[in-house]
Amino acid sequence: NEQLLQLEKEKVRKWESRLNELKTPREYAALARELDIAKKTNQTADEEIKRLALEHADLKKQVDAAEQAVEEKEGVVTREGAEIKSVLDGLQERMSELEAERKKLVELCDRSLVSKYERIRKQRGGLAVVPVVAGTCKGCQRNIPPQMANNLILGDEILTCPNCHRFIYAAEEPQAAANV
Image (cartoon, rainbow, N blue to C red; front, top):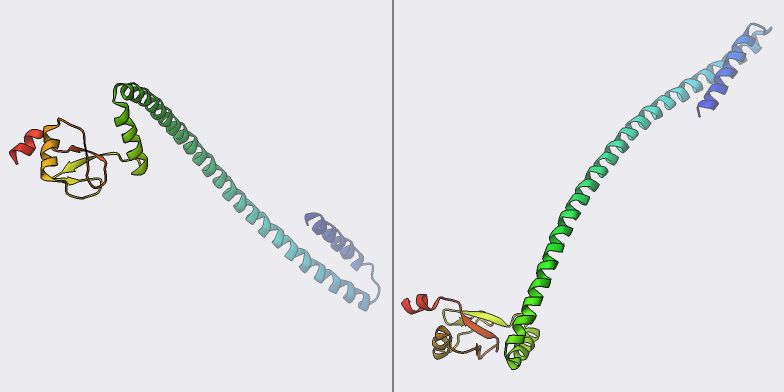
């Protein structure tokens, strides 16, 4: 675009130098009119180039700012990703430790009890052991028989809810329940 403008300006200079060489007023008027039109066209093109240059500069500033913001966000993402990975690695390590401990403890338990626990856990969405609060099973929200609640407080045997069949335990401390 700038090259075209330079060519047009060169053409105007040639025409201006020819103005003095013209012999008839008609030729002079025609060339003067052509010169006038060319100058206006050149001026418009020049203004457009300046406007586009300013717009380009503004857009470049915006792009630079956006790139800087992206770099900052990438830094934050990288930093937070590393933190999350560190936490996740720690949790996975802890989970492995707990699974190893669970495996040892399961070996010490009665096999029929463990298989019953696993079956209930699968059937009840991973929740096989629930507390009993104020005589209510927190697995199914139903009351258990009073005698069963007393047996729970004693803690002599492993009991299951008569409604949902989950293993149950007394949520309150035995002394606190006796005082109530």
